[in-house]
Image (cartoon, rainbow, N blue to C red):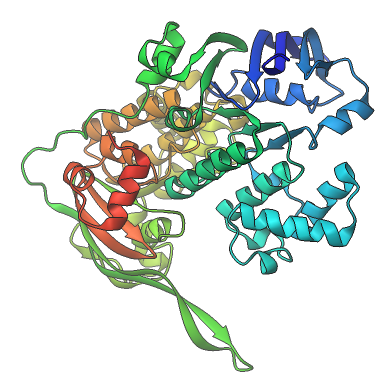
Length: 531
């Protein structure tokens, strides 16, 4: 019997959309062997997810066109078999984990019901037996208090827990092949490591093959046996993991490998003055209860955080999801109520209300994590970038347009595209628009809240280099929030490690990462494989 479980031969897929068919993948050929892990890597738009969805014929029926090729699963040509045969394969012989669990889980149904439904459809298992097996699988994937979680809705679970439920749902029928489409992209390093270990253990237990789709080469190093690289819809290189990383043959593969975060923070002359001085910052959210709705306890999001951010420097905030990183950033910008001292350029701003903060707002800007949701889709790029100018500066139309064009040039965008809308730009370009929006007011400080975590490695590399160039050009100070320690090492002079709202350790970044004192810092450094 052949070792090949899945074979893709010269697959070409296109989309009609009312126009002539536009191919998005061309002549893709892959083989996945029984029990192995094949990583499919490449940037957004390279055709990875289209190829994966084509395997199970999950592409939109109205517009997708399978132009050429074959997909054989255990001898069955999946592009030419009946829909009934496909239903027997989907979820039964081939499981799939999608990138965003909140989009894949039904928000109206409890977790247990969704798992039982999978068993009922594919195995015909009755309710009581299905519930027992669902409980077993919630335990297998490491869900805490599985008896209670069976009756929870998706929104009541954390991101890591939702991803574990998706894994349970994909594997509960014990498939021979698992397709995992970017299953760890939105997770912090600690949860990501747990999910990868879980997948490897379950793979060994079930003896299944895995097609793992990602743009993160550090994950590929941990989980793959072989690697296939896609660019612009074509497969450019396939090889054993060790060989591919040691001696990549295609220029695009070389570019991907060289795009890992590297380099040093921008040089700072002398001993600059402090721009921000934070002393015993505390953000506690009251929990009210009883008939009188009195405060009965607090959610301690941030407790007694103290540090300095000097002019022209970058300070990193690292830690797992829920550690208080973003809350700290929002409190410093006075977007959340807090206790403690916040001094900005010698001014105590912790007591200021909205009106009192107005003179400082143009000097303090923020760039958020997701460039898709951070930009108003109904506004043109010029309107988005120029919105702050209308609020904070009285400029003529010509002066405003000149400022917008200059901000776009600073972030290496063509000013002639300023009348387009966000949906006409790539993810990396949208993040540049968000940076331009912050930059147009000529601020002294920018809060960067995970600005590169949703970007491809090559685009992330470009954005990091851009942030360094802008910092040198304009003397900017950054507070950089991230769970990727290699990115922080490349950009930040000083770093704080947060856990459960408290500072575990802080110090100069290089010293902190190479000689960590706290056990938790060592744990994060090891998981991130800081180079």
